[in-house]
Image (cartoon, helix red, strand yellow):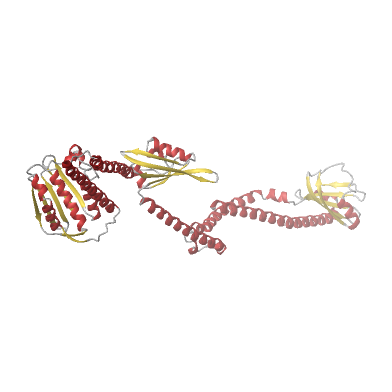
Length: 549
């Protein structure tokens, strides 16, 4: 803008200077022409007076700086010429001569072949009828320019330099307020009144832009808040696979340390499943596939993004389905285990009933068979009851309200209830600690402690110990622990002992008895009461399971 303003000022100054010089020269030419021609007329009158008294000798005696003087007869014959030219043509046809003969004086302006330039001619008729003519170079504009060339050039140089200086200074003064204009607050600028409409429009547009920026920031913050709090991975990429947006969950799930916007998303993961998802979605295909990475399973969902002119990118969602897959496996395993656990007693019941029904059983064996049928039925009832309890705790649908429960009282009850089972293996049971109360369902807490103590007896050694301890730490947490001196749990089985139907020693499960749901009920009961479980075990030395409320 500064350059354009400067050139505009210089152009205006140059045109004005040229026009002024031409006007001045024109006025000078007009004024000097009139004055010059008057001098020639006076010179002609002076020469005529001298000619009357001194003859042609007077004309020859005139200074050489005077104009060309020609004496012409009444018939047009040249009688005398100050240039000394001889045998000149008849001048009767010359305009100024004809006017002088007719009216006494005459003048003309034309190119003279004799003088080689444009001349002004003034003719005066003498009393004897002859015509005296004075000719001199005419005062034309080119002549003025030639005569004033040096001073005019000097003036032009001075004026141009002065114009450059003034134009530069004026340009800076004009542009400075515009350059100092604050686009964010145009209404506060002190500038030319002519720019007020522009400033008003800038102020209005600035307000609209600020509002749009605030709206975009708000939406961006909402988008970031949503995506950053997603457990699912989220990736947006263009049609060249360059990353446009992502959340931290995507990096975590893909095992990437960092991502750079604008670079290819394929650098985040080198797996074929991930590459296929990217390439197929960019090609316009909806793609869904499970990917295995670092021991976990992820579901990739890729969708292309369409616009009027075609596909402009893709959106990838990454879901961690490891737990879902594990739950599905557990569900299948649970179904298989339940089927197995139900089938075994039902087979026994059916077999014994078939023998009795066919009459093959001896009368003295019927009582034995009936006893076995009853035992297997009770086993089924216990198994179904445990499954129902687990289902209720899974769905958080226990039909009993929580109430204050004395854990020491439950520990004493469990010790008394299982005293006979412990006596069969010569196991000593003891309860330690103080009376501590927690909020919970008495029936579930009792079942949990009974299951822990029952396992401590079943997997103990002959003559071992089972210690139940109830206590409270300085922070107010309540503990109930069951410690035994049994066979212990191998390291590889410790994380699975709380699974349904899982048994550490499957070969002796029939001998040990139980449904295989005891510790699973403990785990779900702890979760229902908001308690945590910890397990410490050492082979051939014993196990300690602690519930913290």
